[in-house]
Image 1 (cartoon, rainbow, N blue to C red):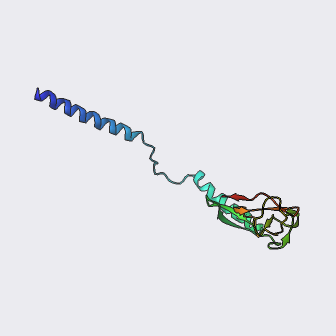
Image 2: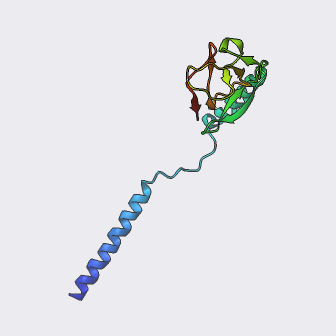
Length: 133
């Protein structure tokens, strides 16, 4: 009887060990491999994007919550007083947040970065404020 219990206990340990071994064989752990041409393509694309951005007078900067690099181009009329988007290269942004529809003046946005909280001025009136992450 003691021998049967020992046999059962040994069988359980062997069974548990085999299950663990089989489960590790199915894991999603990445395998080490040399960089493939597909992995090198994003780096080449980034340098091409940076060159195109620089040609437009901008620079790649990480923006937003995800800190994704974007081409940010400065505007020549940045800071100019405005009452409508048509007065600016970019948007006419309220200097201070005003109630939607209230009379407002703004300043032309400094660059093409659209992240953060802002309120556009269109036709001399403040639009709904918007925050972009």
